[in-house]
Image (cartoon, rainbow, N blue to C red; front, side):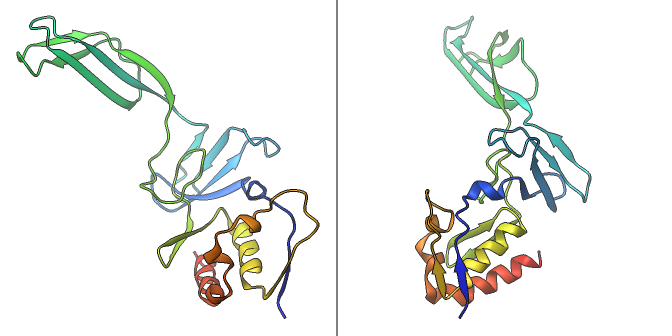
Length: 197
């Protein structure tokens, strides 16, 4: 009988190295913590395929303007996000009178995060995770191959033992469809496919 004994670890145990989709070449890249002992550590993105790298989040600005046209007093509203540089002035064409004039907007500093288009993503850069699959409309994902192997051990086990825990462990928080014995073989097959990715 295949047995699994919970190691009493949380999802954070697997966050030191996260495999993601590179924003440049769309192949596997790696996000690592600069300080593995700190949950709030800055992170570094490196792609071994195209050699793209990024240390920490990029700073960008939200540029906002809310005023009235100096020619006809029509209301002018501008909202732009993820702008690379501060804008001292922006040229705005009035939708009412058609006149264009320079205005001084507000520049609000923000950390730039990638758009993963609704895919499971890392929480620091927002990049799509590399090890993902669809199981009957549910997202199955893992941060890295160690995380994937731990999930495989749990899901494939016919007997799952607790281990005198003091907190909720990662496997206890898994959704019911992952814990269900009737899905075991098909999920293990999906994991085997992801192991070759």
